[in-house]
Image 1 (tube, rainbow, N blue to C red):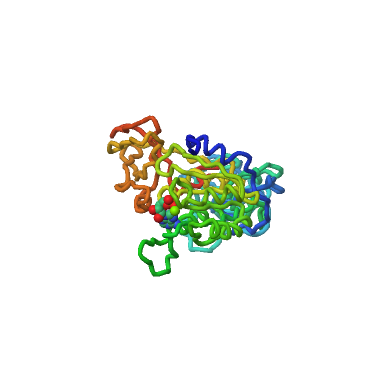
Image 2: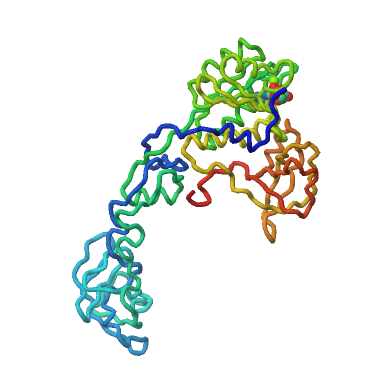
Length: 419
Ligand code: AMP
Ligand code: MG
C-alpha cells in the first residue's frame, strides 16, 4: 500500500534540494517574467542631470519676491530651453529662460515657474516675447528634478532573484542595459499514458477518448515559464512506456499523466521502479490522490493522476513550484485570498479538498462560490474557475458566510511587488 501523506509534506519532499538552472543572457525585450541572476548596480545617476519637471520659466527664486496676479514680477526672457539639448545660456538676476519638461535646468536658475502661473496663456504657440510676467512667489527647487533623485550612481537597484516585471525592465533600460542575465527555463517532457487515450486529431475507436492532459499540461508549463516537450501517448505496456520515456531524460523535469493508481494497467509506477527511483504516495488531497515522484536518468519526474482535473490540481500543487524554483523564483507559494463563502461546501472525503471555485469582488471584500461541477474528470469545472477553495482535511462542512482560503489559479509570483 503506498504511503499516505499530506499536501505540505509531499510538497516539501518534491522540492527538497531543487536549485535554479544555469543562467543565460537574453535581450531585455524577451525578459518579461524571467528571474534576474545578477545584482544590478547603477553606474550613473537617474535622472542624469538636474531638469525641469514642468513647462515654464527657469528663474531665480530671489527675483520672485512679492509677485502676485495684481503685481506681477517682470523678467527679461533671454533664451529657450527645449528638452534634449544642453542649456542655452545662463539665468542672470532679472532674467528667465523659457524651458520645457525634461530640459536641463540652466545654470543660475534655482526654480521653475509653470506656464499657468505666468502670462504665457493666451500667447500664440511658439512665439517668444522679450518679457514674461510672473504671478507667484515660490521657493528654490520647486518644479526641479534633482540628478539622481530616482536612482543614485552606485546604488544596488535590483537584486538577483528579482522577477523582471515591467518596471524592472524599464529601470534596466534607463541604466543602458540591453540584456539581462537570468536563470534558464526548464524543459519539461510530457507523456500521456493509457490504451484508451488517442491523439486529438485521430478518429476515435470504440472505448477511446482524446488526450486532453498533454494540452492542459503543456499550456500550464508554458504559463509558468517552462518549455514543454510533448512525448505523445504511451500504451499501458512496459515496453511502450520504457521506449517513450527514453527520450524524457533530456528534459529538466518529466511529467506523466495516468497509470499511477491501483488499477490493473497502471504500469507507469512499475516501469519507473525498474528504470529509476520512485516514491509512490497517496496524497491526502481531493482531487488527485495518487502521485508518483522520483528520478529518472538523474532528472526529477512527477507521475500525475490521469483524471484531467486531478492532473491539473496536482500540477498546480507540485509541478508548478518545481518549474518556478528551476527558474530562480524565491517565492513559489501563492498569495492566499481570504474570501467569504456564499454557499455551504461539503467535504466528506477526509482529505484536503481543492474545490474549483469562482472568486468575485463583493461590496465588502472577495466572495467565493464553488463551480457547479466538481468531478475529478470534469475539466469544465476548471474552465469556469479562477481559484481553488481549500477545505482542510479535518473539516466536513464549510458553511456559507464563513471566510475560507482560496488559492488563485494561474498565479505567477512577483506580480504583487518584488519578493
Ligand atoms: P488513470 O489514472 O490512468 O487510471 O486514468 C484515470 C482517468 O483519466 C481515466 O478515466 C482515463 O481515461 C483518464 N485519462 C487518463 N489520461 C488522460 C489524458 N491524457 N487525457 C484525458 N483523460 C485521461
Ligand atoms: Mg490509465
